[in-house]
Image 1 (cartoon, rainbow, N blue to C red):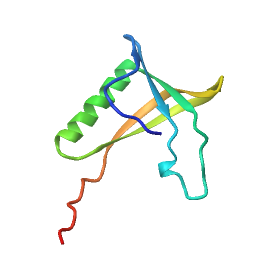
Image 2: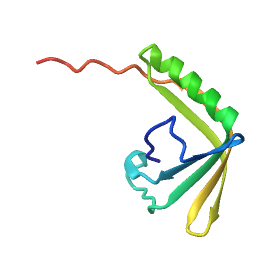
Image 3: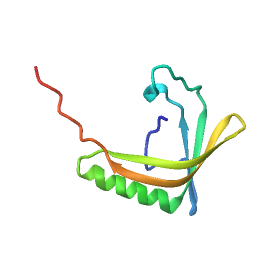
Length: 101
């Protein structure tokens, strides 16, 4: 799923944060395809804020942060809807320098 602007929720109140994503075939296996469909994910605001804080701490050290989200997903109308159960923030691989020459 493609997403930009990690700290910019589409809709937020004091209890929850809602994010909209679109399907992206970029990281699927060669023989797999995914029909374009929107995915709306709702998460408790405190859980989202904690994950963003941990991710910012990792990025401050020069390491990319990966968010692994566990959610219940269902279909509603012609889109997918997810309710987040948990978020795990892990350290990604540091970018490597491009070879010169």
